[in-house]
Length: 288
Length: 81
Image 1: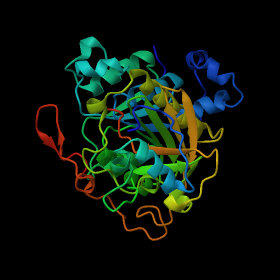
Image 2: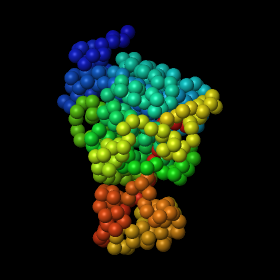
Image 3: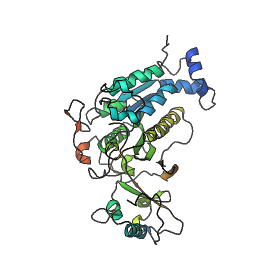
Image 4: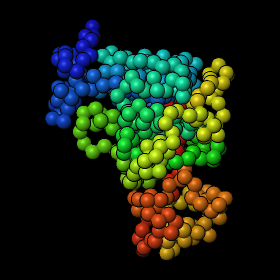
């Protein structure tokens, strides 16, 4: 039987104290920090390669409310890296599969499903219900969309990306730069391959996803030195981690001194990308 | 773009010369780091040591012996099929 106190002020139950004891024993967390985790609301974009380990570690740590935006179904080719889904889930909605696994790991957490693509029409409402946004989308249109929505809503964005043996991770806090400061324009369509086209080491998803989850915990707990204004580059082949400086660009069209992007735009047009295909073969208004 | 070499050692007085030296050794490299107008496109960041060259003097930024340049494109892999 799982008790359901979800507010920051309610005391931790004996079950919670035992479950999270390895966190609570650390001075940087303690019972108060664990209550902060329980009260936190985090939105994860996608329940695939990056979203899977992120959501899993958030759930294990007792982050009280985890939103997941995911409309895809589980494919056999996902199982090389997507830890939330198993062979028996092939063909099932990823959101259903992910929710089952998360609840099985920790029934204390609430999972809020958003079974649709995030679009310019729903993004602001979706992100507004959460404290922190975690992005690991597999296309540039969604990355710019989530960046803009998070900034316009005043939310911290924990960003991660992977390809081949490489990973990138950073944190954007409103006022400290954004994805557009780092990459003002998307690459021409087709120039930067996707994981489906070029491949990706399965384990790199866990590496980058764990880093993203760690940054979420630090934000919630208010501890450590966040990956703000810093871009972590990971090369799994050499196992080198490099830290690059990231700065807010005063000329950024979103967060610069004279912004021109004041509301969400048509991101498919911005990125020159084709509309997203839904699992049933219909076209989705993916990022516009 | 550099025949799978993680590191390439070349000489040059500034970032542009270093990129040109890499291109001379690996034909086609320039097509990936420059656009048609011979500008570094904004989806590619070039870091001198750990600082992006747009925060410095672009490809005119001077380099000294031992400096490291990293050519880092935007990645979009993550959650999804």
